[in-house]
Image (cartoon, rainbow, N blue to C red):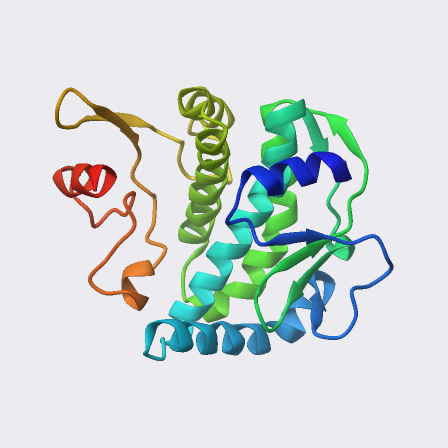
Length: 241
């Protein structure tokens, strides 16, 4: 599984994950098993990074939401990336995941794997993130449906991103729709890709996130291209810029 993880990390240039082979990474890394007790420190560090990068201190729920979005997107790819490439679903235990306090980066200790279908992938992701959502909920001030909507969005966007990086966006969209066709509790929605007509005969795949990732709150007035706040005309302009 280590080699497959390396392939995913290499393809996804913005995936902030490194591999670990020892018992623990050492000082400065918070084990996922201690997330609840260390989350206040992690959120404060995320707020400091946002202030340093964007010139303004975010509200606590914004910093927590951005950190949770980063974690869900990353861990979603750690499950879906190897499965997308090989059909094998990684075993990713909480005791094999650490978060670096200073950066928010993840470190994982590769384990075993087993063949799985879409149902198996959904179940593995849901089982892993459920305690993470419980820990974050008091900080992000969102209800269960909104939190599981974030999981849905980040699982879809991870598969979509990996496909784009490999030059197979259309295939990746079909895979994401098979993984999340809708009505697959606890995920409150599906991938629901659609096509936008662009200029000069071009067309673009897009979807609308179930919830906002709050990027606009740290970089106003900008927003993600899949944000519910962005109309289709603006999406086309962003995609073709």
